[in-house]
Image (cartoon, rainbow, N blue to C red; front, side):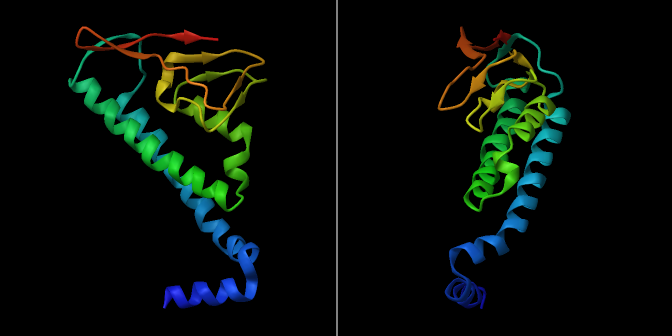
Length: 155
């Protein structure tokens, strides 16, 4: 039944009409996924400090869970909201707000793309007049001697 309804809407309204009907649920889902990911980071990880953490230890497991929620849910819904033309996905101010809520520090005159390394959390500080995007990678994590090492990065 849902297929027939969607097909008839597509036939009568076209792609633009169908995306207008889909916009609100996708935008709401994007907001919910972002809120769940941010709250899970705050509850499960807390504030991330630079240091060495044993691989497959408690911190590594908790970080893996939060990384999965961010990469597999928040960013996926953000990409879906881009497909339907949602303002939520394209707003650089909301990207900075999400990044700051995840613990990062982003200055006022900085443009943050969705391709940011969202799993850097509290370890990345971006100064004024920077642009992140286009596949740029700035990861504070490395593996050394069987430990996950987190280092503070400032730009």
